[in-house]
Length: 370
Image (cartoon, rainbow, N blue to C red; front, side):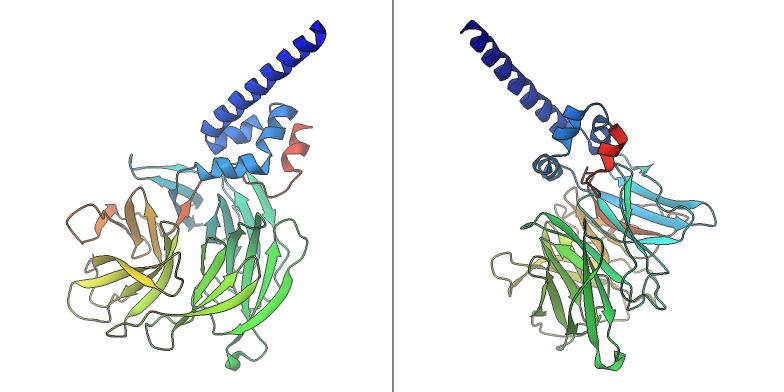
């Protein structure tokens, strides 16, 4: 009887220690947890649990990632801008010998591409990478070509990460687009279906759905194609009506919601403005005007649509040109964008990023610890 009581006390003590250890793990940054996975099998078991991984991810702080690919000066780097301290630190260097760009980032994973149409996923915190099979159609692809639109997303219902690839059908004049999907853990791309209306960019992932605009201009025929990652079906959403049309538009994600950026149509005379409309989470057909910004007058011929607009640390960050990053503070009385960082001497692209230990291969750390 005494032996059973002692074993019960020991078991309770072990559970308390495990709970305390898990709570400590929750408070550690992802880069530290990646090292902790290699300490012993019991720690590996805790840190490989999907519930723990996503719980830790939900507590993470979103950061800004500035991705530069300057091969001439050996700057094929991924960097994070820490705006509070105005400092940068280098992440893992992916595919250093190749000219690459970032399609997008999701849950701490980067979706990378190159001019051949190849796709590679990278978790900079763990160093784990995964080269995907070549997509179905990559002929003549480049960062901006119509056959090289890829977007990484996460399906909350199935807890799966998926990469979507859109490419034109056999008859380009018909504007018919095909799409294939690669689910992380599978071995091949799956050709899923087709739709009409070529996307204008690589898309935006928000809460399990990938959104694409079909026009750069804000006109009556513009619409948003919506791909639900769980059902893998395309739906169509029309843009909200406006008193006056024209100008340029693009999509982004702010505060966990889909947003529509509308730059006014005036080509001459400062100031130019940008409206940010936010899609209601309850009513998917209703948009709410959220912000009205005054854009800086950069040059008389500069007519652009800010595509890299991010919400971070209570502020809105907008990349206007290849080397400039601006910031807007909603709590201030001013509606103007202000320079957030001195002009860098190399071009970069801006993305949201959150450090995580999301795995790309189930046996990656098991092989390392053995």
